[in-house]
Length: 352
Image (cartoon, rainbow, N blue to C red; front, side):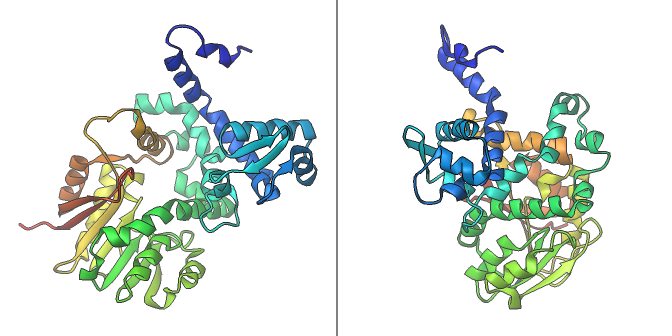
């Protein structure tokens, strides 16, 4: 097998190294997945330990574990303080399942074979514009989740972990004080709604999702101390959304679907919007022109929507267009902080 280290030699070494780093990205992801499955971070804890001790506790072959720990140190998840002696870095602690800021479920979900197999057919998806997940699994992504309760629970946990940063920033970035009741459409376990209600004690909430999506919601809302101000409603947002709110919140929902289905969903929100009510879409907003390589993650998310669910990330103009088709007018687009791709896109009922 060719030695990838050779790719950094000679003219254009920096560019060659960049390409190698990109092409080995999937290996780095699987290294993190192995660390999760072997509970490396939990076994190391807050102390430095020898690789052989970690291997014994994990039931792993000592030399192979040493090689894994070295790779994790090279990736910045661990540090090797002496030959064969390792400790967890601040980044590595995010893989600890017991921490409140853990990203373990998110890492586990995005290294899950069910999330990755459709990517093997990305070229076909680009040629046809169609979702390749259905070709691989014989059903749509969310139907697959519904038929696999364990995977569905993992997905819900990953979405909850991915929403925590937004839940911390959105309540201060948007004026929720104008409203009385916020309906979180497709809100999963209520992580975002709990953040909003916690910061605005006068607000009431409606958490709306499928029964599978709401499976962990009651406990999560209770842990955040907002359960008494929030009702849970199960349903299909492509059929209807519940009445009774003056703000309809959709976070990381619109990007899951193609334009026609987004128009249907937003149309249901428009149909129950009271005078003065608003729809608030929380999504990444793509710039009109790619601003260098630092925004690459959002474009990878866009391709993930293509192959797995058939949706897309959108520019401001594209959000404006789908909202207009649903009878809504975009009134503001507010970034949720420097370096954060997410924006709060507010829309109101369009006037005739």
